[in-house]
Image (cartoon, rainbow, N blue to C red):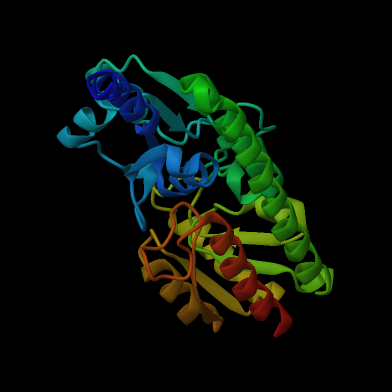
Amino acid sequence: MHRRSFIAALGLAPLAARAAEKLRVVASFSILGDLVRQVGGDAVSVEALVGPNGDVHVYEPRPKDLRTLLAAGLLVRNGLGLEGWMDRLTQAAGFKGQVVVAADKVKPRTMKEDGGAIATDPHAWQDPANAILYVQAIADGLAAADPARAAACRASGERYAAEITKVDGWIGATLGAIPADQRRIITTHDAFGYYGARYGVEFLSAEGISTEFEPSAKAIAALVAQIKREKVRAVFIENMTSPRMAEMLARETGAKLGGTVYSDALSPPGGPATTYLDMLRHNTTLFAGAMRTA
């Protein structure tokens, strides 16, 4: 009897190990990494290629990224042209796992870059309604990669989407209390277009959609003139960009530096924006404070 129990235990041990094994997921950058963790919970092990305070626009993959990707069962990327380096990385790694394009169902915005070129704005997560589409895509991807946990992943995704909806309502109420003609913000690169469109905020910036290219002297001069003309009071530095541009705009226009906001990357542990929802709350609090003093 004891011998049969012992053999049965031996036979069940591999099954238990497989049940406890986490799905390894690679996310292209820290914000997506957090969304995957919120949906997958303890069932996933997540690594973001571009970590906190990192700039996904100009990231250069490293040799260790090949190993990280090869060990993963699922890759989550933004899409909309954000990760221009990702195709080279997946090809070099020979990645054969499943891929989730988080922004696949987003209706993209387009905007004019310095020089007049029209480009797709990839920063769709800045609109919480789009983040819910991200969460649904991630939940579907996790369910496909780990069918045994499919129901749990989808239920977790629905709970998290409800949390996003709650924060979205708070942002709308907070900014809606500010007169429309005061809702103007200056940031160091143009990452808040979706946020601005959702909440009726006009964002001015010295850089285009990507941080890869420096703005021209003509574009900077036009922005300085606009800041003075419209009496915009605060300039915000983004955590993954150099503060020099914001400091220069503040000097030239008399606007104050309004603090650090988070657009393309979360903060390191202990910072004010370690999760996507914390990022939304932190940014909104700073933006609203600046606009109320206008």
